Length: 173
Length: 103
Image 1 (cartoon, chains in turn purple, brown):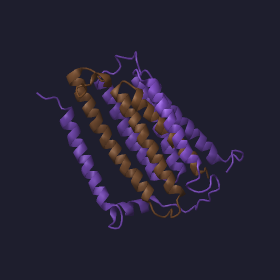
Image 2 (image 1 turned 180 degrees about the horizontal axis):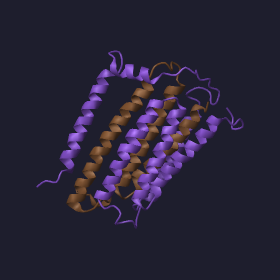
Image 3 (image 1 turned 90 degrees about the vertical axis):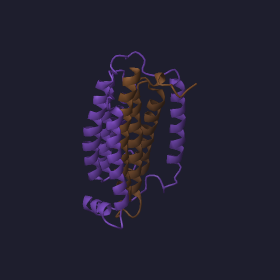
Image 4 (image 1 turned 180 degrees about the vertical axis):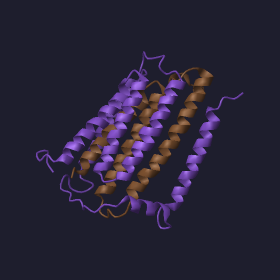
């Protein structure tokens, strides 16, 4: 694919790229933390669109439900509970230029590994249209040949995290 | 189909923006939000590599991404609880103020 042929898919990709990266810049750059949280939701919505483009609809639904729904609300609550709105003067610490330099260097290094064709020729891929369905994902999660043990460990981790969050955030009397 | 390197480029940009937020923001909640951005960049990479790999019938990439969802949710819950707890004892969420381990 070149930049010349303009398919609806490429248009959607560009739209979701703008949503994701623009939202990310909003998260990092906003003075007001509530605006940061809303920008985070915009960015996560763009990532859900990427999941749809990559034919992973279940992950897109989970992204909207868990990330935008649950974690977005959690972060908003944390902003309100900690009165983060009172000190809006300085967004960045004193080493922000060093952080920007490090981030830029990391991006350039990553781009080198992306551009160098380690994973096949650039642009010439033919993708098989057959795609694993959500039913297959469920079978993989709950069958013995699949990921049933990691799934149990993940549920245990969620339980531990929930109890830990309650214990840590509880007011000791 | 949009080629793989475009997805990787967007994911790399998102990761780097998140990394800058983690390194440079002063507010701990903003740092946590930037960590979420970095985790999502990794998720895009996982699903993109899964989609463009040869045996697309397996669901390993999606399964990995789902487990990252779980870990991210746990991390957000515990991280925000720690931030609230720190705010109760020090009345600040600026990460520079929480330097008891530094001397």
